[in-house]
Amino acid sequence: MKHIYFLLFTLFTLTMNAQLATGDIAFTGYQSDTPDSFSFVALVDIPANTTIEFTDNGWLAAGGFRANEGTATWTSPGTIVNAGSEIIVTDANGIVNIGTITASGLALSTSGDQLFAYNPSNVPSAGNETGFYAGIQMNGPWEADATSSNTSAQPTSLIGFSLAIDPEFDNAYYDCSTTTGTIAQIRTALINPSNWVGDNNAITLPSCSFNPTLSVIQNNISEFVIYPNPTSTGFVNISSKTNDTIQVAVFDILGKQVLKNTINNNRLNVSTLTAGVYIMNISQNGNSITKKLVVR
Image (tube, rainbow, N blue to C red; front, side, top):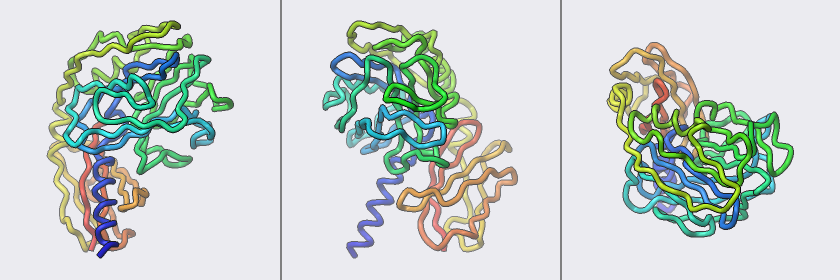
């Protein structure tokens, strides 16, 4: 019985984290002068009790994080954090306007650094970058490799979902020039460094009033239909309102990716999966949704 409870708890935790995808949050500011601070905006609703981990470890050209720097873990409150909410971590050691934050060795360098946000149940590694949410480089252009605590390569999966502040500033923030529009429009403005204000003196991170709206594509993706589910046929059909290519990643209840495929005919082969419960992350035209899959 305890084993069953553990599996249900693990599945619940994974589902909460898996509902976010790359680009669902974006950085809006940082301060490497004391106290270390950063901010980000929720471009989609963040489920209650979701955890997001942040690190200033650089990303290696060969994949995976460079070691020996720190992390901070943000946990959303027991209610949904609405799209458009800006989370401001005034001090990574425990002060935040929404949810809670705990740090373990996170220390932003005034000589240049970077921050990555990712799913702690699916930590990015060499060959698996699906857990990334967002990234910001504070040390000028992305480097070819992470060779020091100040440098970092750009993860391939974060191209179009991250930015580099060039030249390097100790502190910088988004200028609120675009706060309404579709998620893609706001994200595009946020990752444009020309929309950022840099300062080498300590600052108070400002806030913007974001109001992202759903595009037609995002409304379509919310109406995905998966059948048969549960399945015992070795496949599932995935349909939406459009005929565009669909990307699917399937995770087991421990957060391990067990299947990844791009489909054009609405049919996903799951014959290699053993009986059990899985989480599917389905993406179309840059937008994502999470569904539960049962294989019998």
